[in-house]
Amino acid sequence: MAEDLKVRIGKEKDPEKIIRAINHYIYGIKGMKSGSLDLKQSRKNETEEVFLHRFLETGRGNCNSLTTLYLSLAERLGLPLYPVEIPSHVF
Image (cartoon, rainbow, N blue to C red):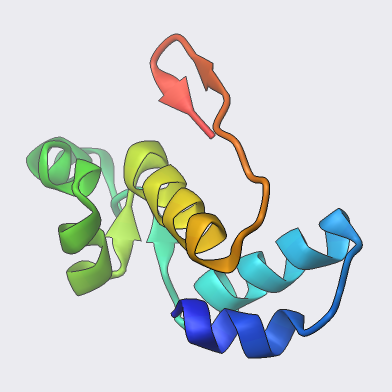
């Protein structure tokens, strides 16, 4: 994924455009989604959606797995991306 993004981002330096490219790649191209389809499914998958490997397998994650993916990709690409944590949420 990092290699694909590296090509898509190219020499872009504008942070907003870089984040747009990452968002488009994750949500548009890879088709990943945040959260479960419904509340019942959400409760069932709540513990599994936290883990990055499950998110990559299923294409559905939560704020923790999404943030982990973003940070992992940013680290591989040498981008200065940092998480923000508030009670019961991270982005």
